Length: 469
Image 1: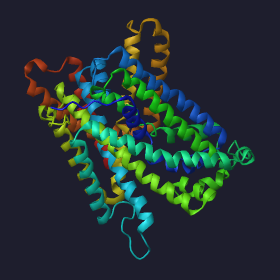
Image 2 (image 1 turned 45 degrees about the horizontal axis):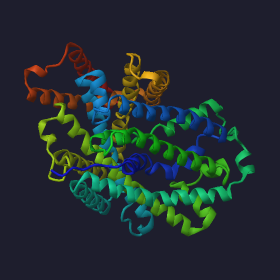
Image 3 (image 1 turned 120 degrees about the vertical axis):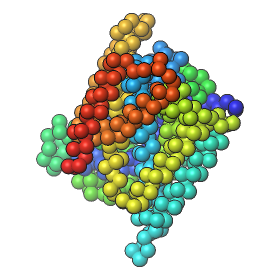
Image 4 (image 1 turned 45 degrees about the vertical axis):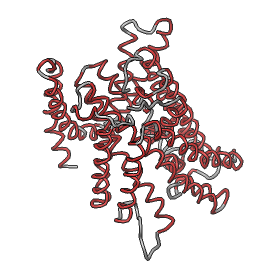
């Protein structure tokens, strides 16, 4: 079996690429629609503190527990037991696999803006037959790429990440040149929204809630890192770079057009802004950048989705079949599971159109619990005496990270967290089957049986809520 090891820059590119996908291209309009300049700055400041604390939590955990491979699954398992570890892995895999479908849909919707005409709709919103065929072709092309080796796929992602960063950096350069302090200062309070600044800040944070999903990428692939110390470093570097891009693009945009004008732009709004500054060629460049961006993010998330069941299977949380690797060191059974699931979701998108959105929102909320567990695990370690001389700073980071994790759950809303139990329920049956494969000595503890019982009982209100949505 060929070893596949990933270096620091490829790990950093995976973290950065998974966080910077399609959302950044619509960020100027999204922010301007709910907040003025002051609220945008405050919102990013609060989000920045929270997300950097979460990134530092990954850094500290990679130093304190270098033997733990598999990132969020391994941390949840070590900190809170087998069943919680499984729920973390299952929720993350579902979020990554179902959510990644959106990248393919967005890419073909962007392509449709080039080729569709009023007389002939080829790709539409990414849910036509032609889009389904094209998305399926890319799905299996990426499947073959990852099957040839995780390292090769990571290097491909590094090149694609550099390519998609160029239009973003070019936009920032033009925005700096066109930035008008008078336009930026015209209505910093966002008075035309008739909403208090505090409410505007909350609304901006609801947008930033999802933009940093993917922060865990280096930790998920930690078993394949060339140097374990690179895992935490890559996480922090990726977050800092993504945060800088997000802040610069959303703030500079408010100095090019007034807030109401920005809010009225169609998405991807960055393309409209670029057209204001450079003409049609700039809009074309940003649209092409969007397609490259989402496809690069798709490669990143495919790697994560294939790795998590493999890591969990090694500890008996997933069935033993998912421990299989091919001669290139790729977790091939897990990759097949991921690819077939994505193919099924693409079929749903084609058949149901926007009816797929609810499933996407439910699955996405499942990634927030693993983020909370990261902060809580670090908190558990440092308050049990770990950390040495840097223990005081670790305590602060762990508290801020845990607080931010609770905020994410609150902001996502109880409704979708409750509905996510509809997906956790079947997963519990898979876990019980996996533990049975290991024999009687792997039975659940009393606390885990209680958690399993509460999960199953909670399916009743979850089903009721789903029926009445």
